[in-house]
Image 1: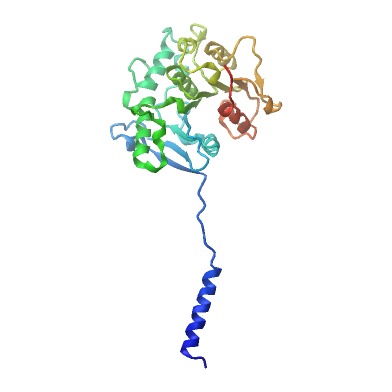
Image 2 (image 1 turned 90 degrees about the vertical axis):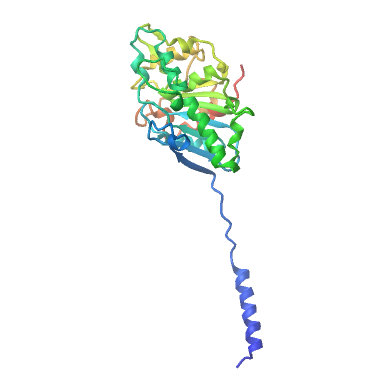
Length: 314
């Protein structure tokens, strides 16, 4: 029979032995974080629309660059999670914005008003009440929602440094923001690129502002903008079922990133390393052709890498 002293020594020994064998569990940091935020959470007065903004923040290898993404007609921000997660895994912060998108761009194609498309883009983007077919006030405009959401993120996540996307005077710092969008959203992204010098413009299945009444691209597409053309890219599909391919080509010529004698990069069977174009035509078949440029086809990530990362020369 062992003594109490021996028992205590053995107890201490085994306690130390057991503790030395314990594996220290170190929590693994997730590569990115996500959050769904309703516009009314950001501003109680902004109660139009129930869909949440989809916000993704890179937790490692952060580039200190933001991609502002604008979805197509009647889409929900999280519908674009595949593309958004690709971007955040590359170090971008991403905001897939909830905005008022129930009226299609195609509603304006037959109108005799030569400024119909311009008025549409102006009202949805800035809330200027000048378009007869949409009703967007300044509170729920794209510009206002971006500004308010950034300020909300700065307030609710002070450790995450969202403030880098605002200037010292509190304005949106567009030089650190790539604007991107699908379908209707591609046009809004391009319109923002006209108004501000953004980091770059990336358009998917757009822009779609072609007037069948005047048989030409919208006047705002043909106007000079602040973002240099060499920073602008578009990915389209030749079998697009919503907007004729020929209209898209004419719009891109009107914008100036496609010239009449340019050859398109046909990204169906070619080596993607050879991309040297600002307009890329993808011939992949996977569901809706209109959605292929933002979809899950295994060849798309290589193309996305090019349009978001390539360094074009003027």
